[in-house]
Length: 411
Image 1 (cartoon, one colour):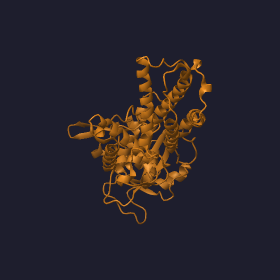
Image 2 (cartoon, one colour; image 1 turned 60 degrees about the horizontal axis):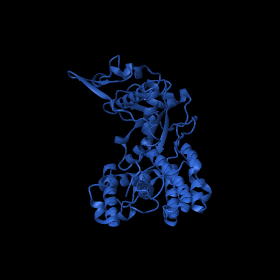
Image 3 (cartoon, one colour; image 1 turned 135 degrees about the vertical axis):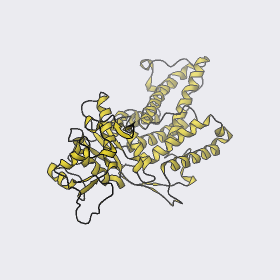
Image 4 (tube, one colour; image 1 turned 90 degrees about the vertical axis):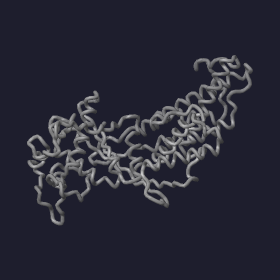
């Protein structure tokens, strides 16, 4: 599946959310590689394009091999004359009547205000990048056709629809007919002292996470070995902050120091903390096995699961382990094709699932002692609990992988 990447054209603060949405779903969305530009003498040409685009030279767009003549011959061409009230745009190559094209093709879901589009070199270059992404998608053995999902901020939706229609006019292939748009709501900041971009936002959250870790763990958190831990916690905090809200809704960021914590139950750091607790539990058990304190964990077929009598144990089984495959399916499966162009993706499902799982696991783990005294009559219950929590650990890892987060092994 190819996608359009408009991160460089997004308003400050929105790019991080769109980028995360594009990376979400375990690599099912393939970001286009920027077009390669080959220089031969004084001529720059786009390389790696479809044959119809290969000879595109930006200083010679009117050549017979470029897209401009194709647009000029299109029934939707408007020439250089513009509609009433539309001022000429310097650098415009030609103009096309998008509204007429929408009506002729019977397309639905497009903005009714779409009319005459002034085609510039920038728009054609953006299309060349999309075309290359499609070629890479199909060349990678993913079929002769792929679906295109435009992940775009609500502020850019109108411009992206223009690009969508221009692409359909220039290349009426099967892939352009399958274009869909996943629109992200705005990202707002409460009481900003100055405009903030994605890089500044990341650095701010990282500094806050570092300070929160030092406050909780003291000088230990200042060790160089903690650099990777802080980076992972920061990435988790940002991903959960951005993706826990439905992509269509507005996100309001509170950038004050009090808004980030290493133990707040609604944060990505809290999820990573509980993931690390499970890793520590199994590391401790493995060391005890090596020292001869406990016997190795028997195969599941030899375990007595009737020893699991705690309410929290059955809650983990019935509320999380059993429905987890369905949760993943709901989160990662895009809706079936429809006549409109908008689609939705339930990116918030996995985040909310992990947060609730972390809260219930933490409550159980704080109440129940897993590794008890090394007495043989206690081993059956300990083995059953370890098997259950091993499945919970694997579930944590699988869910975090959909968010492109590696689990923490210690904290």
